[in-house]
Length: 161
Ligand SMILES: O=C(O)CCC(=O)C(=O)O
Image (tube, rainbow, N blue to C red; front, side, top):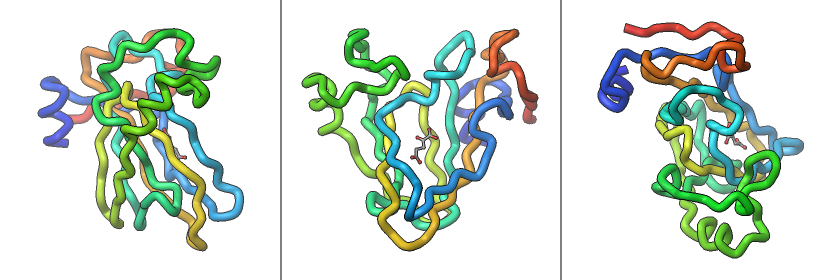
């Protein structure tokens, strides 16, 4: 909580409309996820949410752990870089240069990673023999409440002290 207060510089809320789950990746049928930003389906006045990802076991490139493109929340992108679902298109040369900057962030059980809702991230398949599990929540500053009538406002938003 202290870290979130420090980053938002205001009281913090957690949304139950997004993430709010234990995310699993199964060795057999868990899929890879392309480069995307969490904000893509979220509706808030400002793109200033923070996803908090808690590893319940080891996470690394071989079991589908997260990769991030550092500072990519600051990028100005051309519309043709994104596909219709707001993933970075793999065939665009400018995107290939971005993918080359991607870094894997290995986590141990109990490690937490906080990332901006505009930060591009991706994950591969799980080629280990263990299910990978993580707890994920999304937080926002109290002044950046979900836009009424959208899916982001459709579930409870809890003000935290
Ligand atoms: O675990 C994955 O494949 C990706 C998860 C992810 O990027 C997300 O939930 O935003």
